[in-house]
Structure formats: structure tokens, C-alpha cells
Length: 299
Image (cartoon, rainbow, N blue to C red):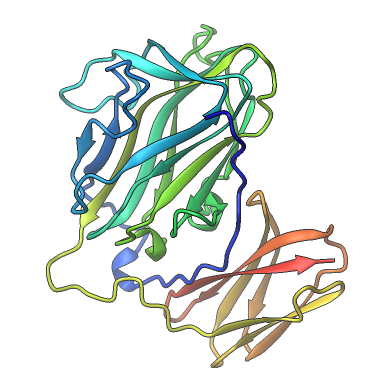
């Protein structure tokens, strides 16, 4: 398992329907839950499985090895005790959770995490709808950065190695719903030491069941064309119709670098000041709520 996980990016078609209004609260059901209490490194499947795909959820890790230590009560699910947590041992690259969301919507992902002194200080979260190609999670959850710092000391008590809760809300991201190949990767951006570890516990994916008879939950009708691609100075985003839209450009780590209104069939962005690399363009139709994500290369 000590191989390297390479983040790959792809154009992902996304639509946001009115039933995914992120201003609403939802009664969440647990689809998958990993307590890690068994302490068995050969078991990668969750303790709780409520999906409709025959229990196909699992995790993969890319690090030196894993072991277990006393876990946390943070994000603990009913009926489970704070037993073990899993440790991804240095040097660590990433852990990937494959979690089908078939027949579920309003997806949320959460977990408890802590690190030792030599564990990864900075982690990045990526999301995939095909299980292979990944985009920064902030494309789907604009309220939470895809890059975060892992604390090794609790800021309230001063105690060391307190677990912190990380939550990502994908209720406004239709592509995460009813998705047979949904996956989340947590990348340990700076975990290259030969000692230390990053610890995870009570990993939970939740959602609400799609009512019987609801179909076409991930339909995407918005036409978006990005050209030229690659581009050096200016890039055009073309649409099939005129509408009130917002265009946001993210770098590959999910940091917003540009935002513009778009009220015509073609909008031109000056990207000369951006550093060379891959960027994600998110376009939101403010009239229909539909969102599309596209990629371009700055050179």
C-alpha cells in the first residue's frame, strides 16, 4: 500500500436542481460509518452500510502501513463506543474512501482527526464522481476550503492531540447524489517524515433517500464551452443561451482566484496574471441554479 496516489482531474458535468437548496436543513441518514474499533487492518469496509449497492463501500490507503490506537468520541455514531482509531503511518500520501451514493442525495461527509508532531500539518480534500478523476472539494462545497491545517494541540484546553471534527457539505452539489462511483480523497500534503502519523476515527457519509419515482437527478442541460484551451492571456466561456450567470475560477487546490458576472453568450476572462497550471471554471446559472465545472490549462 506504500504506492503514490496521483490526483487526476476531469471535466465533471453538474446540475443543481431546486430540491438541493443548500439553505434548507435535511434529516440525514448514515450511509456508511467506519468506527475502526475492530483494529483489523485487513478490513476496509464500513461498520454501517445502508446503501442499495450491496455493500460496495471501502477505503484504500497509500502510506507506509496502518495500525490502531485509542480512538475518539468526536463524531461517534449511536450504538458505538470510542474504541480504536486508525493511524496512517509515515511517510503518508493519502487515503481514499469509495462510497456509492446510489438513491441518496444531500450528501455530507465528516470525520474526527488528529496528528502527532511529525504528522501531516496540511491536508487537502478532493472529490470524484467516477472514482478515478478528482477535483478539489471546495468546487462542491464552497463554504469549506479543500485545504486545511491539522491541529496537534487543542486551542481551548491546551491539551495535545485532541481530535478535531472535519465536515464537508455537498448538499448543493447534485453530482454527488445518486452516484455509483462517488469517492473522496484526503491527501497528506506534507507528510514525508519517517516517524509520526495522522489519525482518523468515526468516518461518516450521510444523506437523504431520493423518493421513489424521482429520476434524472443528475441531469445537466447547461451548455458550456471553454476556448482556447490551453490559453496564455485570455480565455472565453461560451454558453448556449443568454442568462444571468456567475463564473468563478479556482486553482487546483480549490482556492478562488477570479470571479466574474456573465450576462452574454460569451464572456472573456483575462488570465495573464495567473501562474501556469490547471484551473477549474465553475459556472452557475443564477436563474436555474444549474452548476457546471470545466477545466483549462494556463500556459
